Image 1: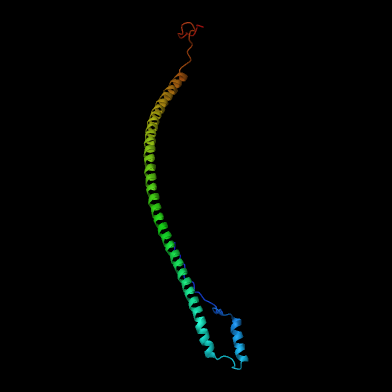
Image 2: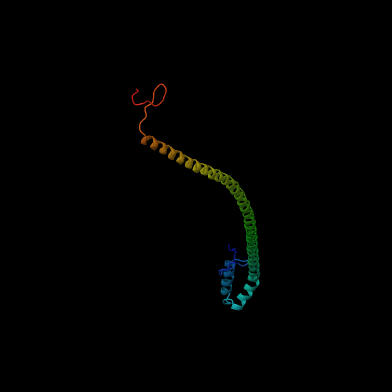
Amino acid sequence: MERQGVDTPHIECKDQEPQLLGESKEQLQGEESHEEEAGRGPPSANRQLVMLEGKSGLYFSSLDSSIDLLKKRAQELIENINESRQKDHALMTNFRDSLKIKVSDLTEKLEEKMYQIYNYHNKIIQEKLQEFTQKMAKISHLETELKQVCHTVETVYKDLCIQPEVRLNSRTWAPLEEGEL
């Protein structure tokens, strides 16, 4: 982020005709016309300048001091705003740094907790896999035994099918001879 400051504006005052202190414009014009009527003619440029310098000099110096005071106060306000913005910028930088540290710490703690949970689950999974492996080995052994039993039954069945049919006595369960029923 970039700090933004306030620049001092360039103040321009338009040329305004100043009001003289103590006399109005009409009074001055009245004096000029009164002098013309008296036959003296229009006042000279030097006389006007002397009159303006005396009365308007006070006005302009007062106006200049007011303008200077306003400029000074505006500059002070701008400096105060800039100082305040610099303080805000420093505060935000400190806050950001502090937040980064806290987030980093919390992330590390979360990561540690995740690894603890992973280790716990890994132990459980390892135990279950070991049980599964043992049961699969037992199933494989039983399957082998079952195949042997099936093979034995198959062999016995084949042997029975090949031998001639033997009739049994229902009372004694002994083989009957050919004439007995």
